[in-house]
Image (cartoon, rainbow, N blue to C red; front, side):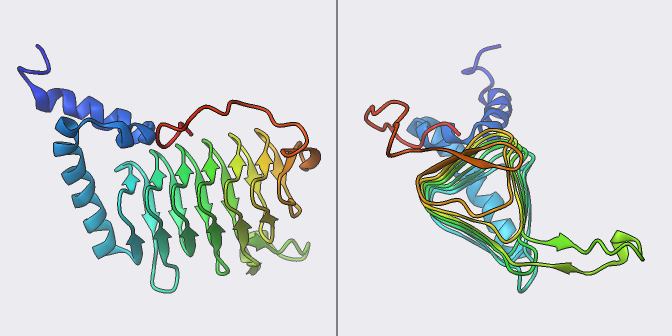
Length: 221
């Protein structure tokens, strides 16, 4: 059976691929956008009817992602932002434009919320929790109250796979957080941090690493 004989059959697999690798959505040819855009429009309209969510243009949300935004815990998604499969997002969240939230991430805004700046890339299995439980020894932890200071992540930040960010942390613009780091303190602009707890290991301006090729659209991860 070919794509031409049964396009719907192949669309099922294509939708799955887009759900786990959403940057591919922005590279679709017009013939594929004819079915992909209505699919996304319907999904996003349903979300906005059921939850307190504002979604800008050219956003991609995997149908396998879970977004919850009660009144007072709104979620805002900026233009060309994507949310991949198996993500859990609970407001309040303010997410800028061209932000990548790759698969299996957990973002919970607590009461104070999480803010993520434009063009930030969040790799898979990142955990952002903007709240913390009390730990007094005279009662079970689950019965204790929690506090929420909020998390602020600047623009053009790269957060590597498996990173955890603690409540109350601010990560400055252009910072890089290495894979599996645990961020417990504020991170300056342009800093490169790694480890558990995360420590400063470099500065993007001093030792630039990577490629300066011309951008061809939203990048992977």
